[in-house]
Amino acid sequence: MYKIKTFNTISSRGLELFDPVKYSVGGEEQNPHAILLRSHRLDLAAVTQGLRAVARAGAGVNNIPVSGCTEQGIVVFNTPGANANAVKELVLAALLLSTRDIIGGMQFVSSLSDLNDSDELNQMVESEKKQFKGSELLGKSLGVVGLGAIGSMVARSALDLGMEVLGFDPAISVDAAWRLPSNVQRMDNLPSLFSKADYVTLHVPLLPETEGLVNEETLRSFRKGSVLLNFARQPIVDSSALKSALDDGHIGSYIADFPVPEIAGHPSVKLTPHLGASTQEAEENCAIMAAQQLTDFLETGNIKNSVNFPEVTLEPTGGSRLAITNRNIPGALGQITSILAKNKINVVDMLNKSREKVAYNLIDITEVVEGHLLRELAELETVISVREFQVT
Image (cartoon, rainbow, N blue to C red; front, top):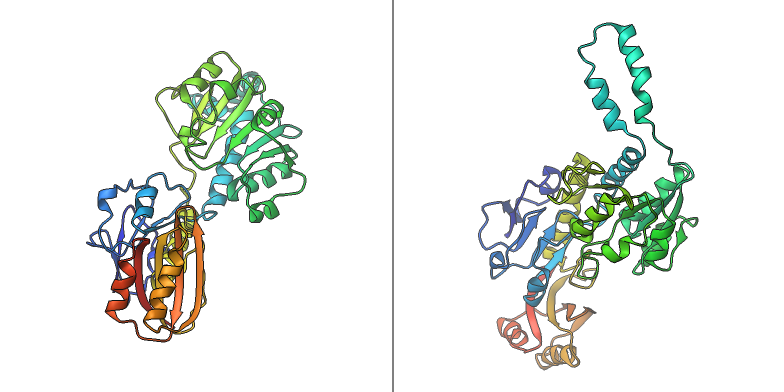
């Protein structure tokens, strides 16, 4: 039986996908085969022997020690796109809040609760509403940094609102490019996008190269009085540099999903408490996708939506299957196949793929796997992990 240790509250829609005959699932599981979590910060010390996978019910994996997992042959999954619509809707709300003082207007009306006369109330509203006057999004320009699942959806919605949309993503995938509307203007660099956009919204993952992407230098490229939205990750924006840009009016306003002390309470800042994926639908979608990826991996060895391993899908032929992780160096695959040949193992089907420093192999064979074969494979210096199981 496979043991799945959970952290955080995982939607029951995802947990019910684990067949109770095959899986034991819960927060108390010891020495699990897999971990399923949301925002819990996983310490490398929690990566016990026998752990094969970690699944994040969400897109960001900065709470998981990915490199340490890779070194131990542990596959890290995420669920890209599962919460994309929830984040997109929050970004659209932020766009509207940035251009119309809706919050200020509602607070003003609430302050008039002691007025019992309708005529007096209406007179007060009509005389004061001019202070909440805003502008329209129609005809304005939106710069979208990062054109993945969320960024492409935001771009499409902004076009529907009548905005001019500028996009930048040097690492855009083929699938993302197909999703992107043709009338999004692709920009060659960030300074060009920043200088042309009335609004800028960030949708890039937090990586070493994106941390501090918006900083003192890049903020100088922004159009004066422009609006910056950050519903990606907090460290992508340098808070100190942003505060200076807000204080001198170079940035008109900032709306983000990540409260930080430096700018909390600033009159030109609106912050939400990390609500991007906080919808029932998004939590269910993420849990379902994560559970499906874990069960497919544990039962067949197939890998989809991993952040540290290659995508590998091999239709089972029936019988025994070997899943072998090795260091991606010349000669490693030859060593593996040599051992199989020496032991007169007939390979029915095989798939080998690599990603950066790691390679992954699925090998279907006709013979029953003997313990000495697994030991021989595991003792190879290039091999990180070996797993054998039956697939149908």
